[in-house]
Length: 369
Image 1: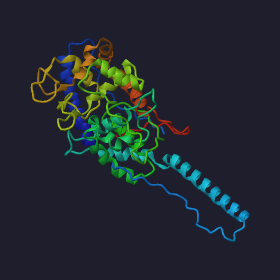
Image 2: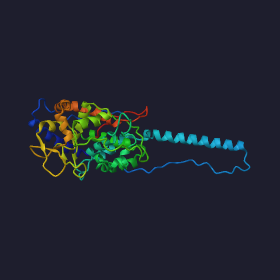
Image 3: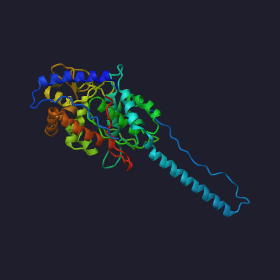
Image 4: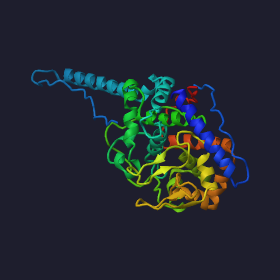
């Protein structure tokens, strides 16, 4: 991502920060945006493709049975080693990808003045989130392993409307780096977006395997419904294995991006800096007076003062539910605490249900600045 967009995003964030600080009725100051850690540590749908080794057709007439047995054994032995080698190559192909180069190339895809607020970052975070947030800890199904979000019917679920934009934006990199799986590419794109838009360093590791055909797509309804309340929010996140603190931290990602009436039905940004990763979701949520929006769309809230920012019914539970609010107040007052907890919860989200190779390294990437 170019320096110009980062500067613009952070300038925008500082303006909103001053507005929040001046209007704050909470105890505790809203912290400034810290610098991202710089330490180095190391859709299209694919067609089904299967190679089959064919045994030659032979006539049994005049052939010694012992020779036939030897030939059969030889063919079967060859097939065994061929199959084992192919499986081994498929499971270890992730080792051939240069993830530092892929990180840089994803970052270079973020900025686009003709798209939304000028950055694909928010929709990359949403893609990573929705690819991973289908996990069910009881059935051990769903999650980013398999990358089933690129197949129908999962790609067409209502919660995934508009994510074809993100997948298509990333598709050239899948062709450039064929050894990275779609599951790794989509989750890494979320990591890049969080970090390059000013958020915390996210620990990430490769090794997800892709389904080649549309199998194991998760049923609709596993992602949060923005029109629901606290019982629904807990049901969705508890199914994945998150607690109230982790749920609240993950909700803070709504500092990024906006809703679109042609996708979710809802409309508007959560704050004044939708391309900067901050704790502004919490400061706006707690500091503003929220009133129902008067329009022909689904029920949502807007801030009473300006009418420019919005909150979803599911967002409001982090203000009204006592347990969720406890953490919201902490994160509104201390951005560093939010960043630390979000980084842990986001890594956990991206790894749900994934059986990583034992030798998969953990990366903490440098930002491009």
